[in-house]
Length: 128
Image 1 (spheres, rainbow, N blue to C red):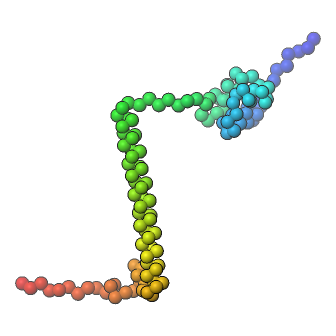
Image 2: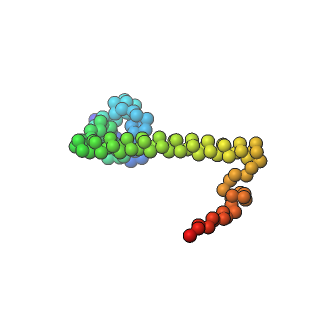
Image 3: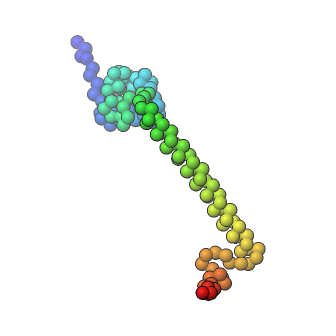
């Protein structure tokens, strides 16, 4: 009499199958064909060992106020990113200008340079 074969999978193997599902994007059917494991079994492993659970479509339910707030924040982020980009370009332009002045005219214009402008200015007395 032939006995029924019961397969026991190690936890490491189960985690490996779930990682393959998550990282390589393999479907449950592909894993079923590749390893000969039941689809329901793979589904249970995914529910148990996966970081995110079964792949599914994310549905976000928001109130109109929340949607408006998110749009406002996204717009604010976009404007700030544009501002940062402009400031970075301005800084680069100013630094390049200073380098050209130093190279072409031999003038040290950096903040720590000792120039005549570093000397304190004399104040004019006001007449009473």
